[in-house]
Amino acid sequence: MVRTPLTPEERERGERLGSLLRDARGGRSMAEVAAVAGISAETLRKIETGRAPTPAFFTVAALAQALGLSMDELVGRCVPAVV
Image 1: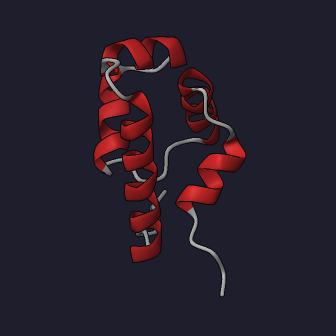
Image 2 (image 1 turned 90 degrees about the vertical axis):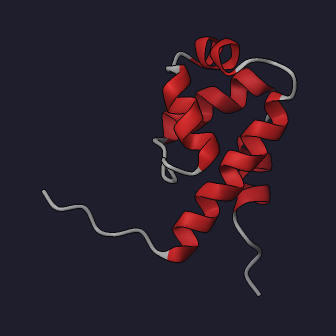
Image 3 (image 1 turned 120 degrees about the vertical axis):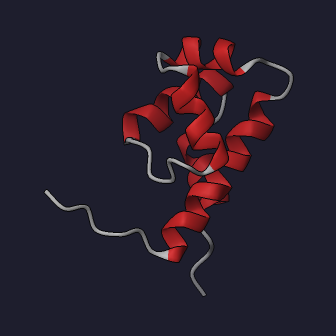
């Protein structure tokens, strides 16, 4: 199966998500947050750096819970407002 290339907007959204997660992680280590979320530290690293700009919904939900963020907050901060 061939994967459709990501649009520039999708890449930007992934970068915003990664930045938000990195900021929310604060002083906690990647390994600590990843373990709480049930994912690998490498997966978290890829998301935070934008190399995995479209992580699975349940991965994002697990990270949000581990970081004390609501999904509404993530959406509000990652998706630009429609004008």
